[in-house]
Amino acid sequence: MTSAAEENVNATLLLIDVQNDFHPGGSLAIKSADEDAKRIADIIRRGIENPTSPLITRLVATMDSHHKLHIAHATFWVNDDNEHPPPFTIITSSDIEKGIWKPRKNLKLPVRNQLVKPLYFKQAKYDIDGNLKLLEYCIEYTRLLEEKGKFKLCIWPEHCLIGTKGHQIVDQVSTCMTDWSDKTGGSIEWVMKGENLLTEMYSALAAEVPITAQTDYNIPLLHSLKKSDRLLIVGQAMSHCVNYTTRDIVERWPKNELHKIRVITDCMSPVEGFQKEADQFLNFLEHYGIRTCSAEDAFKSDEELNKEEDPKELITYE
Image 1 (spheres, rainbow, N blue to C red):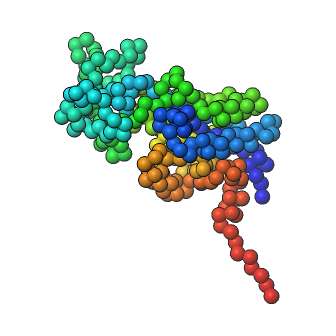
Image 2 (cartoon, one colour):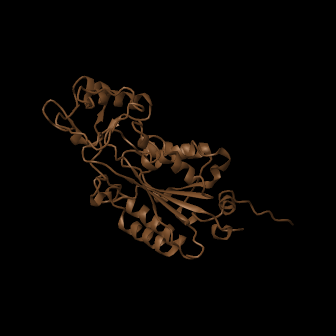
Image 3 (cartoon, rainbow, N blue to C red):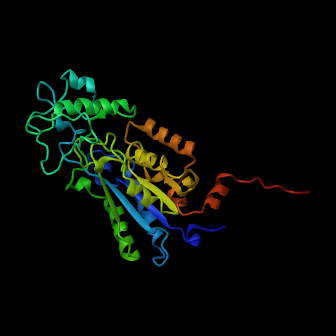
């Protein structure tokens, strides 16, 4: 029976949003995230035990990357009393049309790039000075979000703000990533997501409502991941960003190569209160036949895992 090392597998470790704000002490903390991170760090350490023939040949790390005035943050919105919505408030297109919540009047969009491209968001309307009509945009954006049937706009605690400590990779994993790069000569490939403040982006492959080329499906990233003999997926959160990044990968992955993907389930946890979404994700993986395993088993061959999952009874002969 061969192990991953003996097979000389070209293995990619995809780290999804292993950032401080999703860990205890962060603004959107997951209680068990530190334990998940310890196991992620252990996978990386084991992956470079033999630097001349590393078990992990590639590190790809996604990073949730938000502005303070993001459409899914409270400070973007106000009511008639100039109050912001509490965290986890759901804002619907109907709420905006009724004036229950509206984008703050003094909101100034960045001028150095166009956050909404009419080619992608045909409903975009502009005033005579060429400025986006933000209220109309928000109504159409939330309507399209709801139309897709997966999400309504959820107001999250401000998290992963660009340039803050909460945006950084958690220390114990970051240290191991640096060691991997130093010992193997490989460079970490960074994927930023969520930088456009006018659309939500759970998946690292595409925004929920694409409004620019940068928020549309990232085909080059998918094609690069498909070059892996094995794709190991870890990170936070199991209910959201791991969930929808993995779905976007699986749904466009060659059906005869789905066995290459492994989701390391003890290296991720759901956001508190979203266990249902995590369970639905596990059902999705089972439906597509995606291998799930523990960190301990991350580098075992398919044959080894199959043997453990389907033990044969010992037959004795008299």
